[in-house]
Length: 350
Image (cartoon, rainbow, N blue to C red; front, top):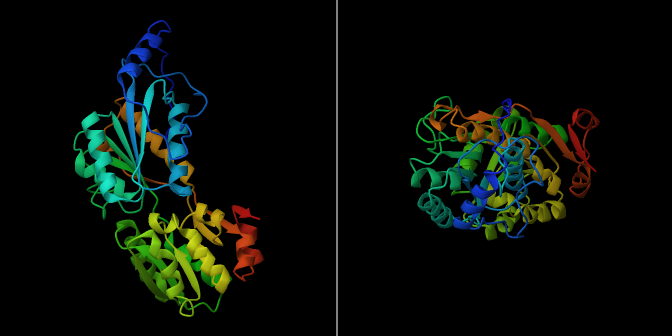
């Protein structure tokens, strides 16, 4: 699903440094994540695009956790490969909402006031904040499960307006099947999710829709803050045979709390994405967020070059799915991963 990159002409060397110096002097300093590490790769692999000014891209990330971080890093790296390198052809203004919708709205308002050239919103809440705030600036989202349900686009095929992007809708049924494959006698699956995240509710509904035919019952535990995650996990002990963690930003950012309970009680954890498996869940069947971010960057390049408008660009999904297993996590939770699963896994964390 990745778009073929186009090589464009380099600006004349004697004009570009003067332009970059002028724009940088007038612009604001790009924000960086909490650890103050630069988001930009060392160098681009293609020629810089012709432009008459340095472009500003505002990135609003709902919260820091491995999946969203990977999507951001994939986006920035892919832009650089297409000749849009942070600090040169573009200036990236990175902001984190720290899991606060109020902060997400403030960030969106700042980007609107600054008249940035493009916004990348990472996760549903920041995408909603950006879409509600600006009707003119091109907005791309990534790591959004159901953009139609979230009110971001009219349809997946024809978004309309100024918003489009990539969806991380995960194969919920295939992921729940992993529970039965590892623990055939499993009957009840506990799902912890944030009541304030539309994408999470969509996944819970999807799990309920397929539970009967898999011989499973779904038990829900809705939370409103990250401090409630451990309590929610503990409330299900003795009632569930496994936990399923959807791509819920609040829960994933506090997944260590769920894993602690799961390991002590020998309850297997299946996750909605691979970074949670690398953090300690047993298995997932899902997407690569770095690739998803790169896929979003390919869409951004078309917009920045004036080759396409968001409203005409269908929402994209990732075709490549892979089985990721964590053998050490399985041991901690008292589960033996069947050899058949190991044989077909795309990645095994030892």
